[in-house]
Length: 591
Image (cartoon, rainbow, N blue to C red):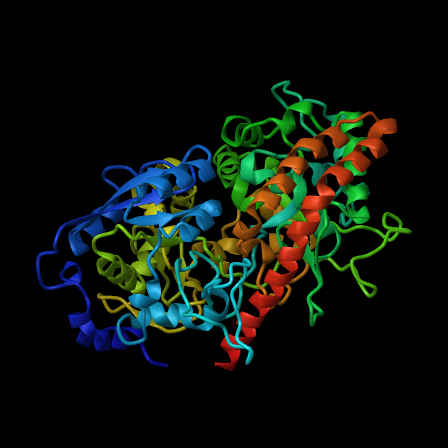
């Protein structure tokens, strides 16, 4: 196997392609990139050691701006005024930037010849991440009679996650699931929970015996986050209960060839879930405040305090709360993600999306390129080539090790057999939010292109030590860290189930569908219908959940009547968009 060091030496011949800012044998040209990140965040410590190294080696500094209000409104104003940072992550509102013409086409700067590392990183996923123009204005890319796409392809954003090397590694559930505190499962003698009834029964039994925590604060049985775009916690569970991974607000049949696609929230098979929530609300397990709680002001503080026993969410969404609980060593109040599905009894007499629809638990997809999520370069950036050159530099193994693992001997160790590991002290440091701001470069690395998965080739460091192929780029996936240095509570907890990792609570990843995940598709062409569709869900689903039991059916019928016209328009569009996206995938495979 070729050593990566040899590859890097060969790349030295390409220095003429790299702007002066990257020259290794000259004083770096000082430059500051302005960076907009459309999510809340904290400014790094002024003495952050990774940013200091970037400045020393590359002459680059950053000015970070975070979006803390309504993403759509803030980014919409920036598009209107053409008020852009040099580098932009639009987050869940990236469509506003892309459709507003804020981003350059990265294909003008990235190629196998000019940027070999970036090109190698994206080429296998081009069928999912390239976009084609909508020339006739119907909302989806146009196709020629021979099945090819009309117009030239565009790459606005390199996905920040989902372009992994080697086999997919799933040690924990980072996406959607019904989360439950470990202490609730322990109290119930470690049950294997697969259904809604089993899930809520476990919470009810715990609450009956433990109405308050050790401080006298009442426990919350089940929280439902509804704040802004995070209302997926209210809306998305139905598709998973029906046996499908995350396609956003539609349910898709992978068996094709037409990939039957429909909105699910207005269908009869959605009703049993919300009826169950209505029952739990009337039992007192769900607070009225949950429907108006703000993400930062209420939800995260409640979860961080350990008083929320269960919720449907995605683990990355409450990562700050998990870190706070771990820092407090309240391991029993951290969460396990469960993959619940409907039972045949719950769906008796209810029409399925297709005649041969079957339900099998699939909460985790194979590696999903995070389409339109990550950094793009704005059209007002005066030096896009230098941003690209920085990303190309960052893709080198030595930088990826720094971003992922830190500094050797300081933040991680290399064993005699070439394995990466961390001491307990080093693990505790990396779990500390204050330490992170001073020692990691999450603000720039989080949305930049990055290597994930398995380190495929040996890496030789300057001091001659060798990091062997087979290690993981991400410390959180390194077996020695996941298993060997897990806290004692979690080791014992997993042992009760006979599991090795928390991903064992759900089935293995499902092969990614040809369209990817449908939530990644552009909703802009049906923005009005989609907005009304979401507004009605946000307004009327809580009304149904909070209704008196005898009034639930009427509240549900009213919801369905109100949302149906917008559901049809949105669903019809998504059906066409799914088919076209699948065609892109297969066209790229043929090329």
